[in-house]
Image (cartoon, rainbow, N blue to C red; front, side, top):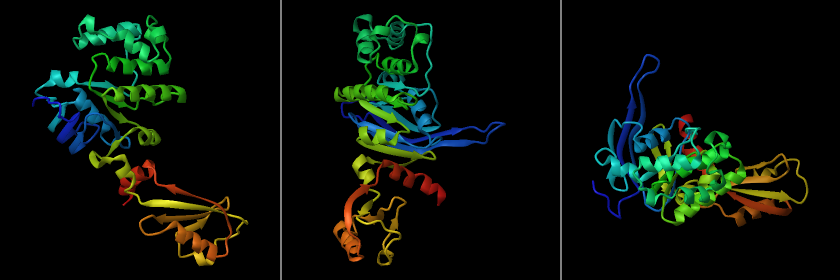
Length: 317
């Protein structure tokens, strides 16, 4: 396979991974013939519960795990037959913080650049350290860095060879809010410069804010893969929350045929679908029930609702 400018950032076809049985565990199929295409230039979210297959897929792309069958290509380069070009096209920021603590950040980046064969004249070690707020720690030993600084250094190491695709595996796990904001500001800067970003995260609000396309993997299968707006529209569920002028002791009997309830703080909460119910009609029903309205607001389904519906709801069925 030969890379072209029109090749997707990632193209996976029929990817399967089976872990052989051992004395302690039976055979496990981690990936069930996964098909997935990630377009260039996107911020792509890959979400799923623990054990869904995310890490296995990433490790196969990174060359750390051998696939059982199927194919995968990075920027058009097949990971099996064009290994060198494929690995040069991707940078991976692992979830676990693991690095040699006896190197300085500058030495760590120079060593990483050497692994990728980046000529000394083309290395950007100081530029990357400055961009990630680590310039003043250039000559400190890694063991002296805080957890947040080590997390930033992991991202720096993934960028030394200027890869067109960057995979961030839970990059903000365990970091404070300020550092999380700094990291995402830099990620958005990379994206604006043309880097394809692939994000796995347990912070669903993070994926909802940053990603323009999202795939959800569950039990080794892709159960959704579509633009974020399309994915959110899958749940045509909205909530109308009404604040009565006077405190109610019970929900009016005439509203019993609606999917309505009285919350503990005295609000009338009505679940409805925008495709079949109108807010005006619901408000008229409430007024006809003799309720005077002092305030109201509507709430739409978020990514967490979709995630739960596509994963845990399926397990319960």
